[in-house]
Length: 114
Length: 112
Image (cartoon, rainbow over all chains, first blue to last red; front, top):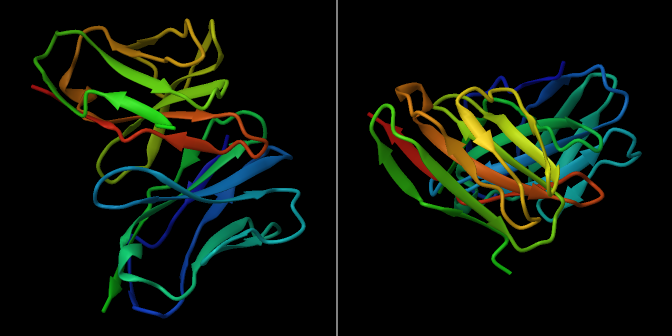
């Protein structure tokens, strides 16, 4: 069984500052993927970043990076230079490799302050 | 490319009614899935399909049916709607090397 834990229900960050959203996971699968999605108030789910369990380097996509610590079973999302448009819910998810069967966390609501 | 499309965007049903939520994708991805999102919770997998003619149950399949006759379409059928099925429903498609899924805009369903 797999599980994702997001312990921060809500966070605030000042515009232009960096912010880290926490995600810890539990899995017995030897190979898995970790994903982050953004859900703005309009409701759609937007893919941000992916990290494979065997990837040696942390994933980066523009202002998003994933701080992957396999031994600690954590996959924190780092957003650099926050923008007002980053205000949204952020979900972490895990899936065994090759299955697409995502297990989602409960999300973190991020508010960027001007 | 429209990606993943869903219809309708909103729907209100009475208890016991049946309906079909439509999902289509133009990315030629083999994998498609349906999730529901309830307040305060993450998305939960209802049903998924690894290709035309192949479907399987996810975490919360009761009360829902699916079929996959083409690569493009993956409808979700509610057989006899119940208030507990009030939720936002997302369809997703994936087929990349990294198992990434792309979601449709969602259908907000209310069952009275």
